[in-house]
Amino acid sequence: MLRFYCLLLTFGLLFTFQQASAQKKKLANSPSVRKKSEIKTERFFIEAEKFFLQEDYIKALEYFTKAQQHNKKSPAIFYKIAHCNYKLKNYEVTLKNIKKAVKYSPKETYYYQLWAQTCLALQEKEQAVAVYQQLIENTAKPKYEYLDLADICERIIEEGVNKHRELQDPKELKKVEEKVKAYTYLAVDAYKKFEYIDGDNIDLALQQQKLLLLVRDVKEALRVGDKFLKKNPANTSMILSQAKILYDRQKVKPAIGLLEQKHRDYPKNKEITLTLVEFYNANQQEVKAHKLLYQLFDNTTISLDEKVNIISFYLQRPSYKDFEKIAYDLGDKLQKLHPTKTRPYILIGDINSIYDQAEGAKIAYSKAVEIDPTLVEVWKRVIAFHENLQESDSVIYYCSKALEHNPENFEIWFKKGSVEAEKSDFKNAIISFNKGVENSQDETRLLSIAYPQLAYFYSETKEFDKSFEMYDKALVLTPNNPLLLNNYAYVLATNEGNLSKAESMSKKSLRMEPYNPLFLDTFGWILYLKKDYTGAVEQFKKAVNISDNSVIIEHYGDVLFRLNKVDEAVEQWKIAQQKGGASEFIDKKIQDKKIYE
Image (cartoon, rainbow, N blue to C red; front, side, top):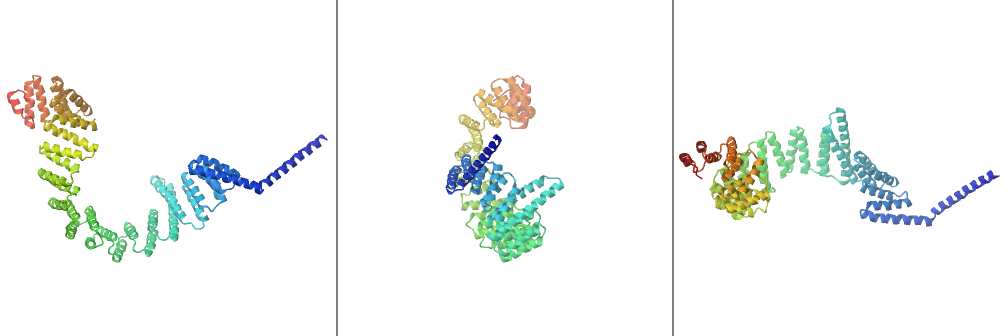
């Protein structure tokens, strides 16, 4: 009886549960419950979108997930959850959700695009291609999707080409080649389908040729070009591409034939003409090449600058045979056509320079700056010619003329100052260098060169305070310049400066270059001035062992004299005298066996 009761109780509970479940399902499907669920879904979705726009993807993901709890088959919510995870770089989770979005809505383009982007982020390029193929299949009117597909294919191709360079195993090489070939034709096909929809596109046609040549399908590459030229017979880029493909494959006659035909059709096309000139010249047809160039310069649609650039281009091509006469002829022709323009004269100057006609170059450049005296670069060429001829007065003259019209040009100021210094005109050299410094715009590199020069110039004019000031400025810019330290130390020591400071700088320079004879001489002379003759003689011994400089040898004799080694001192003075370049007292020292300073 008890057992029966228990069975009845169990059956009753089961019946009650079934009734409750049925009631719950009924309520869930009722309009009022569905409306509440939709309201909650919409509220969470809107809240999530707000956070997504604020780029708070974690918070957005939380609310999109809440929205999904009320609508478990919404493709839009799956997409949004996927997008949040993509932004958070949770790519595996992104894939899981975007696939569900596509499952419930297989025709939404941007679902596939996110799927493909995620594959690319995971370096699964081939899978991305498969996704785009699926997208194209499910899209009513695909268009730009073809370009995206081609782009991904090209990434795979590039990756394959790079890998191919590293491989040695023939089997592996073949696999990579087959893969590159397959994706090449897939990319080319995608480009063709886009063009079928959008019309001919030169950039895409050239890209197809590039890909086809990569897999050595020359025939198809030329077919692409021919097809394009049938509809666009005057397109220069494709004409030149076709000609180059033929020429590079040793099909010289067809390449030249194509260009000759197009030149007859479009005689004023500069690019076609110049390419034909190149081909003629490379194939021993110089007469034809020269004739075309002369014709080109009769073309009034080509500007003066373009014509100058053409000649300049060929001047830089040493392989162009017999160009000298043509260059002079065409340069003279341009000068006569444009007598008041500077460019023909500059060109003639360049032609003369290249063919080592210095006088002709100088005359042409001078004429150019006469027409336009603001042409700094041309002034520099004029100055350089006189400098090469060692005509220092002319260099200074032309520097001055250039600076009348270009007073802010520091390079010309420095050039003028340098030549003035070579002529021992240190007062004017100082003026020129200070002008150069004023116009150098505080550029460290220039000042680090100018200050030491000014320091030297001031020392030669006996303005030692200014010399020391320039050395100090230079050391601020380059504190570890050994030559600068040595020179400063020497000037400081020999002109009643601070011997302690000079010694410190000299030691620093020697630490950097311990076997530099000039540095050893400087340090030895500082010790000499400090009357440390024993220390000084050691430095001079090292110096004369590695240098035959007469000044160093004379200094060695001086310190030997101070050590009462008169005969040895005279011997060193005689050696210095024979070498030349010693001090003005050298003869008197030897004659009197006595030191003079």
